[in-house]
Image 1: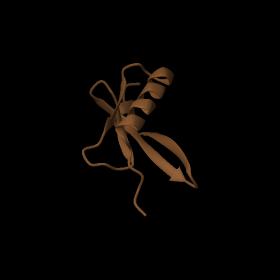
Image 2: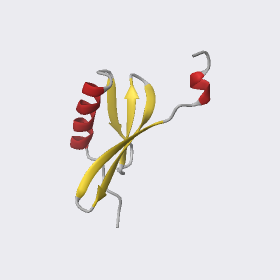
Image 3: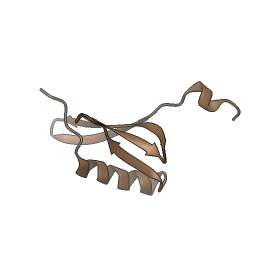
Length: 75
């Protein structure tokens, strides 16, 4: 069974939702190859990925952000 493909229409819906909840400058960009993930950016900075999950006919999206220790220096 292949992984669910993240479509442009889904990316736009997720982007609209995340902009309303987190940051109006946030952008959801599809990856070069079609897969179950899209990348989340604020301006030119990659913030994380959003994954599409389909189980038992239900679709959900998981947002994962990676924070490096060097990102926390000086805070």
